Length: 224
View 1 (cartoon, rainbow, N blue to C red):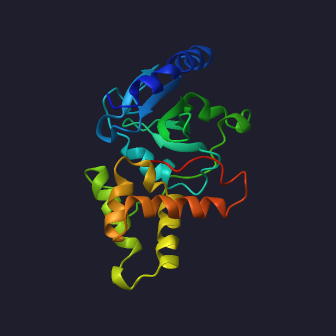
View 2 (cartoon, one colour):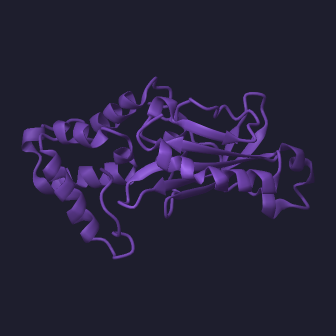
């Protein structure tokens, strides 16, 4: 269990309440984001989504952290599938601590396969807002660090770091912040090293970028 495990475990009663209310077709999974390779710390009503305790959060990278539909830390009504082909309606919310750090993920997976035949009558209930994301370069990576390094390489591709000025470095930092790169433990230090700046400087870039946003959009501390 990662360092945020005990804090994330506080959501177990809520996970159980939701799973019991919506029945056996509703699976609720809790992730500790400080432990990428074994992030799942709790699963209620496991119905075969492949999110068993001890598994990684690789699927969250493409379907949540990189989703264009992530708003207010929530990605709702996206599609996942079980290994046996069942259609799952999923929603994920990031869990933050009192400091504003993203420490976990609260995932709801509803097996809607039994309802697909009655779609005409309950269309609003089983509506899925987006189709599966197209396969992206890096989707098959074996570990989270490969993903982070690939994102950094893609962002600064073809540039000499020594020739990049502050404004361009801030644009790079903003892009990776929007893509959720800094939610991954250790990514901030890696990005700072690649841009040849200190962690303190990178924190100051994030602070400056968030102060330039609206009060609502810029609220909260950087993810450290």
